Image (tube, one colour):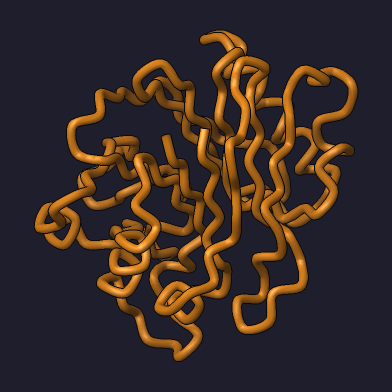
Amino acid sequence: MRIVSWNIRKAVGLDWRRSPARILSALDDLAPDVVLLQEADKRIAPRPAALPFRLIEAHERLEWLRVADTEVSLGWHGNAILLREGLQAECLSRLTLPGLEPRGAVIARVGDLLLAGCHLGLRRADRRRQVDVILREAERFGIERLVMGGDFNEWQMNPLLGTTYHALSDVTPGPTFHASRPMVALDHFVLGPDLRAKGSGVWGEAPANRASDHLPIWVDL
């Protein structure tokens, strides 16, 4: 099972062109089973999807899981989930996270995995509270087979997980930001105790390396 996480910056690339097709082309190269997207919707209300539904519907391999609470958005606070066609999934929770900025997370059941997609805040104090809110909600459903992924805006995961969640493991594939010259690992996965990573990486090939200001990360379970 391959999980991909990617902050797509509303499909705006390094050339400042908005190209949803380029995002989907890059995802084709990664051949994911599940994709956790951040900044998947435009910022201004009513926050329409940055990846148009018609393009996803025309895609031969991926479909979207409905996690939004409107008909025009792909995600919740920009957090969206795409799935390999045929996977059984359901959205379990939409979370509004505490902090200075509007942030959110989504939790979904995909097969026997519990998926949590998130985009955390810019202040470490907020990020600690936000991770705690997400994991407390995930515990309601069982975190043994949890895959949490997203843009954590954090390069040191230990302070976020602390000692409370010592059974969880951090997977940090490598530097993802800025895509033009990746130096900082802001994007991560967190795995439950029943899961192990067979491999992981940062995908820096074209067109992904020009499609956003972040590079996508992947983990094989």
